[in-house]
Amino acid sequence: MRITLTALTDPEETSTGRRLGWLASGPDGRPVGSAFLRLFTKEGQRHLAELDVQVHPAERRRGAGSLLVEAAVSAARQDGRRTVLSQAEAGSSGAGFLIATGFRAVLALTYTRLPLADVDLAALTAVAEEPHAGYRLAAWEGMVPDEFADTFVASRRAMDDMPMGAVDYGTVVWDLDRVRAAASAIAARGDVLHTVAAIDRSDGSIAGFTELVVPGSGTGDAQHYGTAVLPEHRGRGLARRMKAASIVQARERHPRLGGLLTDTADNNPYMRRVNDELGYLPTHTAHEYQLDL
Image (cartoon, rainbow, N blue to C red; front, side, top):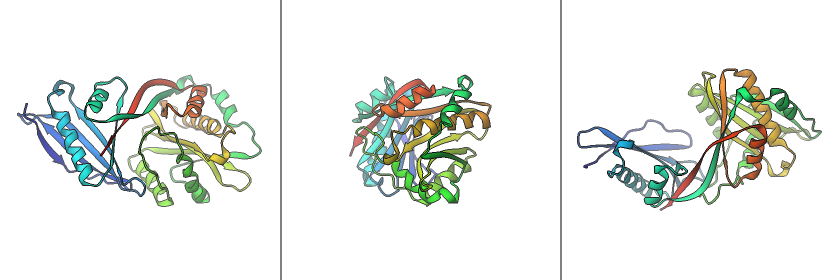
């Protein structure tokens, strides 16, 4: 079957990257698949691109997917990238396709969901309010308050040693502009960003944080964006306390929410244990695949 590729114009450009796109069409002009390539533009990740390829099930094994990957990889090379990442669910046809086109699995991720109707609010509240002489919890919605801005930016380095397997993800460099841009992007699409932070009582600095993005409708499932504790504050149960507080707030402020979603690297047993203890249930496993250019 003759496949025609059409480059797409994507107006979406964020503070962290830009996208290229292609549409694959059959001989009759009917779309059969698409590919989008995100080119990261922030310092520390300019070597990186992320690929999403989709082909209609009825049109697979006819060459469209391979042509889309070739176009995207060629564009990544021309832009000076050295790494292309993509993701597929374990055991899926997409996983087999990525391996056949030269990608290799570099990280396993377990996806989980917490059904909010089943949570024990009293038990979670007790976890969140466990007394600790060294720390207190603070929470806010949307943009970080000015009083916490500097130490919140500094606390983002807690993500630097997050287990990432063999993924060449680079270094995410955070500054206040990036923090504000991320919060603004969430607000612009109508969603709500909730943050819970652990505050070091000795100096008022942020020792860790957890972020949850709730759909603007207040229905469906919310998505955890990240939970991290600075190395010097680990081993004190802060992640468990912060996440419990985040769950309680979500349940109380958004009573129509169905659940909370998160994903955790299989080589991060500590966070997996926290999620298990709080009642998150596995839904599926996926792998990050990497192509070295």
